Structure formats: C-alpha cells, structure tokens
Picture 1 (spheres, rainbow, N blue to C red):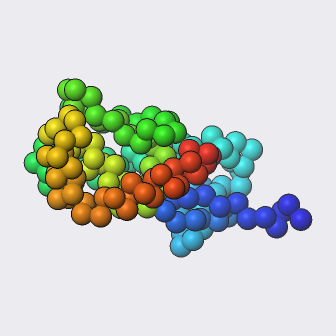
Picture 2: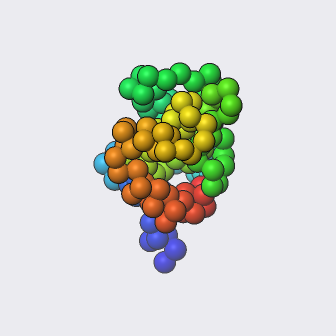
Length: 158
C-alpha cells in the first residue's frame, strides 16, 4: 500500500509527483519530477542540491531583472537554508535569500526579491519603502498572505 502513495514536491508553486526512472539528472516535465533511480538512496540530498541550483538560477535572474527595473544595485547575492526568513538585505546591500523560495509561486518569490531590493533604497519599512514595493508588485499583500499561510510547508519540505 505504501508504494501506491505518490511523493509530491513543490516547485514554483506547483505540486510535482516524483517519478524515479532511468534518468541522468533531475528534471521537471509537465507535473512530474523526473528523478534518477540510481540516486534514490540519497534522494533528500540530491533533491536539496537540485532545489539550491534552481534557486540560484531563478532568484539570481529575478534579482537582476528587478534591480534593473527598480534602478538599484546590490553588492552580493547569497543563498541559505532559512526556514522563516525568506530574504534579507544588509546595511551595505548584500542580499541573501532562502533557497526554499523556489518552492513558492513565482509571484511570491518575486515579492520577496522586490521587498529586499526595496531595502537597498530604504532600509526601514517606511511609507516610501512600501510605495516602492507596491510600484513593482501591486498585489504584494496577497504574496505576504501566501507566505504566512504556506511558509511552514516550504520550511518542512525536503
């Protein structure tokens, strides 16, 4: 009976069903997460590595995109395994993001990116700060709500 239970993993807000098989690498196809059968013995480690690589690629791309749109700069970009702090911006504009954000819908990921980039322009949550966030993400309150409702799921995954 346990073999019939499908393993699901979140990726950009979509539930993907794990499909082990004769694959050379982890890949997404439709609603499937294709996974090399030979790596099942270390599935958690391989999935974590895959998520980190996806996060680096996707978040870095979105940071570059929105930094240009917001006409701001940042000093560096790093990734961590935080479970509740999705992003941060230091006093000297070093950005850090949780790789787990890649499990959230792209709109939510983009909200966190925009939020942290807004901190490169205004360090505190002032009216000016929220004006910047709203300008680049008018529905940001919905993304905040999504993170509050689903953040724990991201933190517990993998």
